Length: 393
Image 1: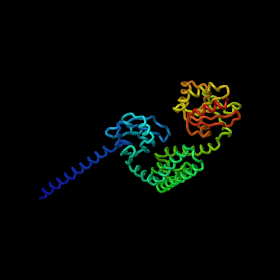
Image 2: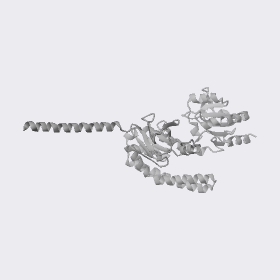
Image 3: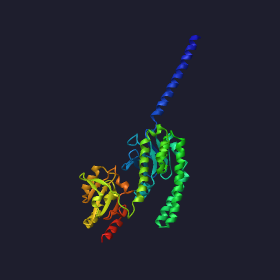
Image 4: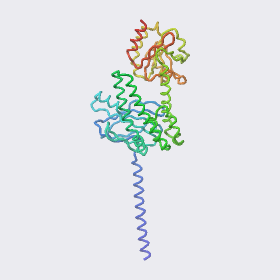
């Protein structure tokens, strides 16, 4: 009897061991099929190609456009630096190469933030998509849900203001709309600050920092727990805060950079490494051309600028100021395009574009012989050349 009980017990033990082994193997298999991609998903779109745009938010450096094959709408990929935060735009390339459809898609990409250690899953359609995945994205959805109605109203007002500006409506009415827009922006900012106060340990509090007004970004970030402030999201936060503080400084500078006001003085290095100051050109008209070797519109406008230079070089000193450029890239572009006028490169310690409230490239300033600002033209605009021709008649 004892022998029979022992045999029965041994059989039961074997069953338990085998069951345990099966469960263990199932766990191992589950682990192995865990999503290996930072971004993956399945989209219901009439496309076989996904265009991927991304900006490394730790450095602020944008990538070139990458392409990714869609297989029955499915895709998956990882970012170049697994420890960086990326702002990503996904564009479903139209099947038939319609340029208008492609342009429309590029202006309305699928947008998401990619964070170290988190997995995002994108599903749905290009214009009606959902982002799920790890707990981070669930928390992010919750936080963004708090401000959704304010964002919708702010978007509506933004579109209305753009329409009114296009029609050249009464400036007083436009300013009333701007005041209403600011009210919604402040509500969005205040709501997110409250969320951050309640969630000082969550990475999503940093991810939502971009919804806080520029003036309050640093203060809001400082409320968070030190583990978050010094964690993987810290470089992203520093980039946001730096950009915000530059925007605030730019607004202050813009109020001082108006026609009739003195042009801010500066000294920068030329292509031979010599110091060149704006003051040394007093007594002549000066054109400051803020540009970059990376700027497509700047390069496109060089032929017109050369014609203008040849026409007015005896009356005007033309000065190019390369911005957000490497020294090697700047020098190569100057040589390749054979630019004959004075060429300087911005010094981050002086930050001349910030002094001149440059918001986009190219931007051109015309300064009179007394050192006062005459005209500011943003973008590659024919109005600049027409204005200069009339000024020098």
